[in-house]
Image (cartoon, rainbow, N blue to C red; front, top):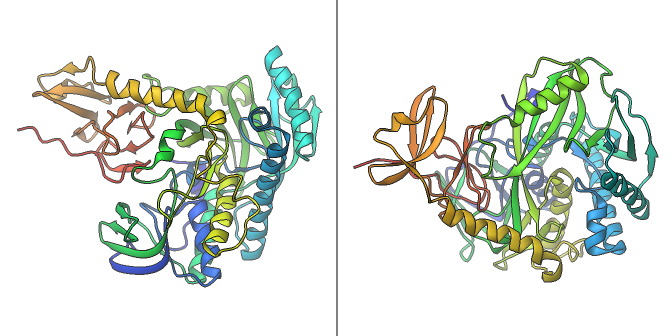
Amino acid sequence: MGAVWNVVKRVQSNVSLQGRCDADVAIVGGGITGTTLALLLAQAGQRVALLEAERIGCGATGHSTGNLYATVSLKLGTIRRKWGDEVTREVANARRTAVDFVQQTVDRFAIDCQLQRCPVHFALTGSDTALEQSLDYELETSRLAGLDAAKVDAIPGLSGLRRALRIEQQAQFNPLAFTLGVAQAAQQAGAQLFENSPVRDIDAGRGVLVTDGGEVHAGQIVHATHTPKGINLLQTAMEPYLEYGVAAVAAPGMLGPGIHWLLDASCSLRTYEASGQHWIVAVGGKHKTGEAPANGQTHQRLRELLTRHFNVSDFPYAWSAQQFHPADELPYIGGAGHANVYVATGFAADGLTWGPLAANIIADQLQGVASDWAERFAARRFTPAKSAGNWMKENIAVARHMVGDRLGIEKVATLEQVPAGAGRIVEYQGENVAVYNGAAGIQAVSPVCPHLKCLVQWNAADTTWDCPCHGSRFRPDGSVIEGPALLPLAPFGPS
């Protein structure tokens, strides 16, 4: 069904890469980060080639919440506990600058993306002492960070509210419409944008990126892909998670404007309006990638929540988005690995704001301009005291999946033993096979992720094969959706 942002109409299509293209900077990824960087560099006179595996904005950006804010989804108190007061102020200032940059970009290029300023709410509907204390700390932290924050006891349209923290002057928009507008501006400034051009190999030393149809030769390479493509040490410092979204047809004014995090329900709510149609959006159901509930009911639980609170019944949209949580709670932006390679990753659930900030930081670095934020979010930073706990947890989980997922695989005499509508890893003729028995019949591929050889796991809600180790995701036919994997799951062909 896709995300609600897809109501926007694409006004142009970009060709796939064919043959050789020479550039100063090659950008991998056509989301909010990559297109913004392409615009900034093209305006500065750089030769830019952007490679998008599918369509501009269709990845993490087009499956996001459409929310922009100076705080963070896990609350600024999380940053403050780990990093202290000064860094908390720095984070809020950086993100506030990014939100303002988005506003300025919309105004400058007249991008029709329904951008509007609105409040953020962290809300409680039940009685939970720990969450109430956390909310008090978040109020104190938000004010310390210079945000306009206050306690409130009502949110228009949301019944059963116990208490909430309100932060003014945040924003919402259609992220796909914004990204398409930025991409158009980047092209007009001289950037070359190639769609349906997945990168299959990257030779950083030679500055060569290979696609199915051609090659880009560039002096500098930027991974604007949510997580770096190929093998990168930063992948060991991030935990991949999936979160789900649904949108229901709504009456005007059903819920007040703003970003509404329901802390005790672990979900967020917002409304969206375009061309006279109104929707109410719920996002939640987060779990580790590759550890999806077997019943596939993540979207259904969100539908039930909206029905319970707002008595809606028509749900035309459902989607999911992946997040990469950094070990020390801050994103990784800038040079990493080879001297000519840059990354923008570790955005957790806050990428719509981190992305434009990352684009500005990397654009400055590539032009030799000092950046206010480069050192704080440097991808090469070394923070063992702040990273160790999450780093150990993630890499223990990776080791567990590397070994445990290969145990207890069911043997079958025929692939048709996999139930209709189900995806299973089975042993068939002495080989492990990832099998989906769908409407088009049996689709069988290797279950071994080509990234680092973990076994993928079935996600019934999304009908995908997800790698629990570093977040690569694949369609039933094995083609890559996202993540570090450059190549698809190998086709299965029994002897």
